[in-house]
Amino acid sequence: GGRTAAGKGGNCPVGLRGGGDEVYGTGEAVLVLDVDGTLYSGGNAIEQQIIQGIHRFALARYTVDKEECERLHHKHGSTLEGLKIEHGMDEKSERAYYREVFAAVEYDALLSPPETEGDPTGYRHPALLRQILANPPCKVVVASNSPPHHVARVLTALGLAPLLATAEILTPQSQGGLTKADPAFWDSLLAR
Image (cartoon, rainbow, N blue to C red; front, side):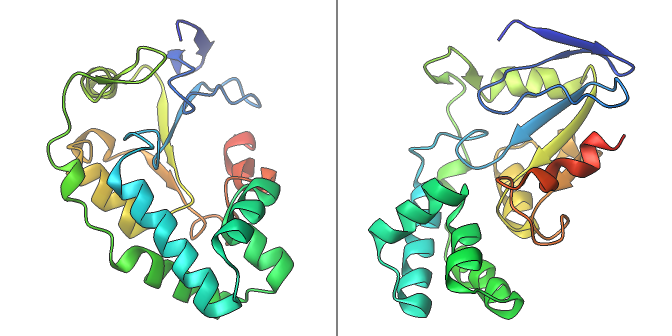
């Protein structure tokens, strides 16, 4: 989108396909970039591998089928959150979830993303994003429901890791086990 948010951090473009939000509290503008399905296409093989891993884990550990996983995701904002709330997933099982779901993800599909790939909004991946991140007009935060090692591998594969070296990375591991669906996940940004 063409909106900008003025704040102590300067003018910050907001509205980049599900990832740009101005955070109010101190007036500091922040560009929030979501990882999965945003920094790369939701139809990408990576996203499908993660979903398949979630379905396998939920079926093996909780006898929760694909349809129930989708219901949990829709109701709670993430299948993980639904498993915790409705199926009593504990911390040990949550660690196993991240290990098992992301262990088999192949990142090859991200190694050479086409410079002209675009989505329905006209946003071009990754050329425009690289241009913005080369000289960000405000603080940049990367958010994901995925574990930090997955975020790091995606950013590296997309060639964005050097541009985001100083970005804050928010994941359930850095946010006390909370996922993006929980408003408290964002409290650290709102408290600034």
